[in-house]
Length: 234
Image (cartoon, rainbow, N blue to C red; front, side, top):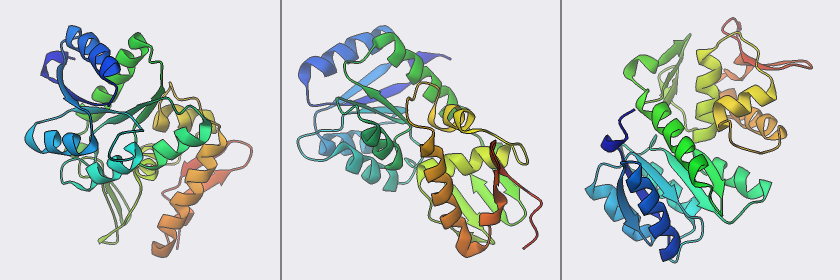
């Protein structure tokens, strides 16, 4: 990966932290943009080609999780990698961050080598997406580039975590994954959250798919885990 081609937007109101992150990441050959508020971040995103956002939770003008929602509404930003960097360290906070659309989550104080590894992982994941990653199984079409799910030609509203979960299961249809495997593949290997989080998102995913009668595709394999079955008869 040629890091020099990537631009990272740091959204942080603590000047010491933003300077530390900037110096470290510039030494890694990233282009750096800085914002102290949510409104500055939105403006910079509109004027620049940004590859990844590092986002603080507690900003002067907006809650960081709310800012994620605003960013995701803009065309072209639905799949922009966003990593939260925050002092909020409880499991509930981490789950909320992911539920609101964060792709990764680190607690402060940040370990810089780990941050670098996570950034490279997110960029590899996002840059690897192409039109060929669109999956079609029966009448279900999921396109990770456009962050679009359609069932029977109808666009379905779906959260980013449920989207990633469904895409992973469809990509590996009929294969059973246990909870730790799903946490690693969908949430990331560095994330430390309870395995029950997987059950919560599976339940949400089934509710999203139920109106289209596609919820039965997400199967529970007793004492093992979950799979996407392509052989369900309505």
